[in-house]
Length: 284
Ligand code: AMP
Ligand code: MN
Ligand code: MN
Ligand code: MN
Image 1: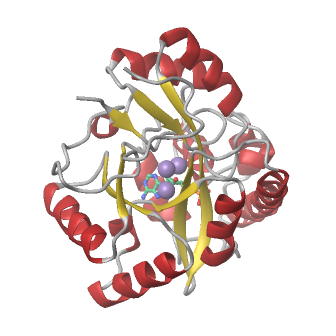
Image 2: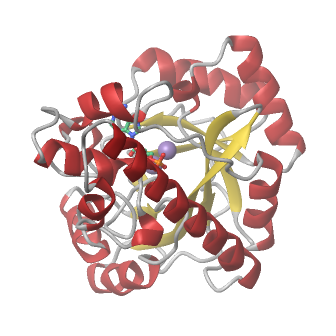
């Protein structure tokens, strides 16, 4: 039984492990095929490939791209992408610029709320082009503004809260196209997290499919059985291939350990059925 984990983060975005440490931990957790999918960047991939070769793990080059559909932020995983694709790299660079501007604005808004220095504070943890809300959350927890990352999100960083900045992420259709141009496959990440009604989810999936989307993440680290069962139904209904990934960020978060994912029904078509062209090794 090959163990897959196709959605993970490193210090190249908002994970706490370097790509090397991530691969090492994946090996310890007996993951055979690992995709590194940092937010809007492929900066960690080369290091991950080197580490994967040393640990005989198959590393799939990936990315998690921020997009929007009908005014809602939607995350699209690109797997098996060519990280040298000029088109993809140029687009990711634009997203990184957008992240810098957004982070500066978040800093201003938090300062108005009496929390100065948040932009510089968040920058302790990463480069400016990779700043995410998670880095602000870490800084606010370190400052004693809240007890946990999730409570910072709840009180400061989600829509309607003082540190939230609406971002014009690229539309879904464009993002799917960039992934295809880079030779990869597009997968809808964590569908349940968008909190859509069933009919809105069906509309999203139909659009995604029409635009060339290939897969749907049916199980992730923080998911539950009902959610997975529902996602599997959607995968079947829309003929999308199933993917699984822990969305691992941090070893201190126990429910999203690398490779800790449910087994899928044997007859369910998956994103790995046809193999990955850019996998670093054939495993096992
Ligand atoms: P960003 O892409 O900068 O908007 O940041 C999004 C990231 O923040 C996600 O990838 C998660 O890692 C993290 N995140 C979002 N919502 C929450 C939450 N409620 N609690 C903890 N982390 C969250
Ligand atoms: Mn994240
Ligand atoms: Mn996500
Ligand atoms: Mn993620």
